[in-house]
Image 1: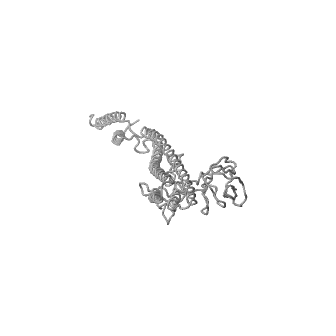
Image 2: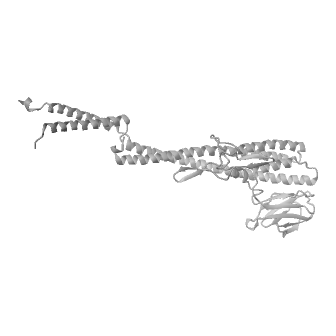
Image 3: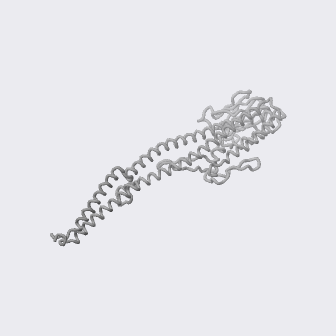
Length: 397
């Protein structure tokens, strides 16, 4: 086989260029610290690295979502703690106001403080987070949820609750809406509530009652009527008598799996309401209490009405405190879940980062060794070509 001079020169130059290109590539990898600079460097490795990058970015987004949820839930928990403290203070004032030794001026002073407490409660209900969004307006986070109109507090938010995805399989609510927190407080003992008719002339006082047999309770509206000062009957909404008996102060009056107690001396024709519990918002409870404390109790019948209403208010405040405590427990559980998820997410992100690094990052020791070998090879090729380029028949002759 004959090898021409031009072919020999071309082959030598190509070898030098290939070695120079390999040397430049290694130098670029060392400068960047990356083994894979383009997909051509390692096609399968580049695809795998991109998949890991997507998984890492997704996990980091879940982390940001969790941070937002944690921030709002922490604000929610603090607000609920403030509501608890406020309700406890209102309860203390209610106990104080119900004391028979407190005169009308003292009750008026308590009512004045309660008005301030009501304004404070509305302020808590209208709190915002760090981004200026309302905590308790549901999905309508830019709408002020509560406003005072006359003697009532109205809710302008919705009943939605925002959720944030914190993992591929888990979403978590970032708080509560105002309807849940402030308006869904069960009336009375949670099964039924009691009240005295405003037209009563006797001194009978009814308690909030209790359930003795839940399966026997038939939800509805009932009226406890005193046909004489010593005889009672309970009628339903159709005026059908469901129970009756003789009255003695403090004795239980039982029907349909529930019982109530009336103390004092009711007059013939006096009536008391026993009805299935609905919901009563906290603002209404405070407004009723303020009205009750501001109403002068002149006659014995007025005082009996006052005692009935104050007893019902204490029960309602206890229900509100239990309700708030349950919501705080929910928030605590969600924060605990977020903490656990954060730990799991951190471990996963570390594994992903390590895997990406193993695929994409450069082994400097190996690369520098390779660079030295390539440099020596290039120098040898250049030296060899220098000698080869001087070979010719004329030089030989």
